[in-house]
Image 1: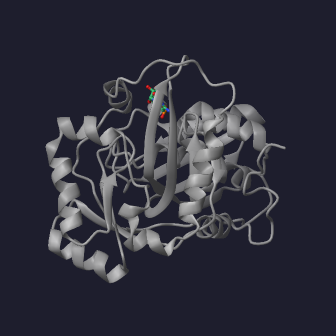
Image 2: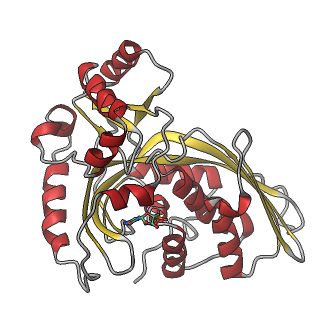
Length: 332
Ligand code: C5P
């Protein structure tokens, strides 16, 4: 971040990476009375990322402009733009903010690109503008933007329950290599949930199922080396959306098989699709798989553990010594 002067009229600038996620496991349980579905998922950040730049200059009134070259964008619908407006409202910001997003994460692909961009704005604005929103209202703001946004405030590996916004961070596990296939099919998330035809049940007052699930996930994930080679025996790696999305797009099921044939120890769809990814036992086997598949739609990635996610954010925000602003503290 350039901080040429402490004067507020000086422009400040920050360049950040807005990482994508994959769901390493995703189960949709039931439809809740608030219209959302109760889910259990294992999220993980990956190295595929959008580049974002934010420029800020303080002033008498608020103006926010969001630019996303190469992609037609209705600014008001953009989650990063909405995140900036809501953050500004919450802390009473006055000034001009320019957000530019260089997209690399496929849109509508189940990789959380829009949510990640929104979280990136929430993470960067405190440092950029010298303002602060405490953990609880920040989380509430993130949740109001979208179910996946809170996850990107911390990154790494986490079990998500509820709408996916109730998060339980897991210890880092090795930064496994993978390949993902983004075949250019956009799956609308609400329609994918609807197609699952889950029974309607009331909102749970308390999530009793969680204790068991977390124990199950943690026990499996605490032996991470197995994940690279023995994934199929681990009980993880299921995505409930595959049945309904593969029925409409059989080419996605074929990509899953092709990833396995190319050497993936496990392959599955992320989120409500359409991205299909595979994890490989090593970097070399992933790169060999990539050349075997020989398609522009195939991208190599690495899992990004929380420690690396945090380091990257602190470095890019120039907060090497100042950790009071970030990471956001969970509510007490
Ligand atoms: O929270 P988000 O904006 O990502 O959700 C988009 C849509 O996906 C919701 O309006 C809802 O139809 C569906 N959804 C759901 N259950 C969830 C998350 C999303 O039904 N847990």
